[in-house]
Length: 283
Image (cartoon, rainbow, N blue to C red; front, side, top):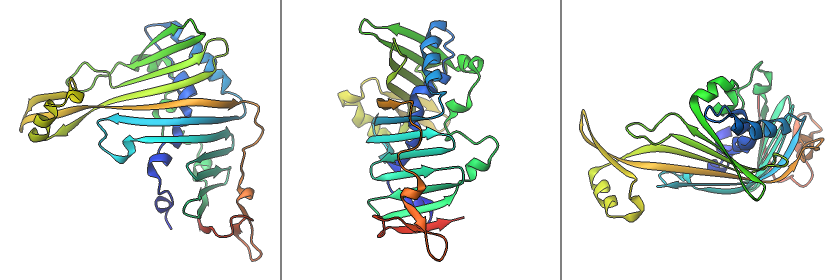
């Protein structure tokens, strides 16, 4: 069984990295327009420079228009990060990581997949494939984003990062990140990422959409080398709401030995309570 066959709930698992929203935004805080925008984000970043953190999150994604299955999502997540251990639980799926192995548990399918943690062997592993975690230079980030900060009367602050890059042929920024946080503690409350792109459609669909109020201001047309081009302005919003934030967690809620035990003849087998799971092991 291949890894891709194990992960049937693609919409959920594609967002395992989005738990980084809060402190990822902090690392992008090169708001060139307002240095004040940097201060609350820097404070949040310091919160997550602890040895470990345990989070509960609620993720919601919606798109206008929705053009693929990954455009719509709603899920609760429990996440632990503490080198070298990692644990993610969402929608009946678990990902358990230590310095040597990765274990994926699919409860609805009653399956487990255990394989070598090759990323841990790299000198500089890719942080989940998330671009903003690779961009550690504030000077570089300031070239890409404008930063503003708003202080609310309720003790909740808002920091907004807006991409300096526009969608082709428009004056619409490609991306915006909005972070709400408690001003007294720097605790993140909610982070929203908005991405804008252009989706091509044929002339018939374009004409039909012109009659729909929902697409007012979301349609574009221009001349290209191959004739007239018809486009929809697509907006994808992903919202991460923070629940529990435990900076005192000493260990992950679940480890490999909670799901697997040594087999008598060598190797591993599902632990008690998981005997009916099919275990696949890959090198």
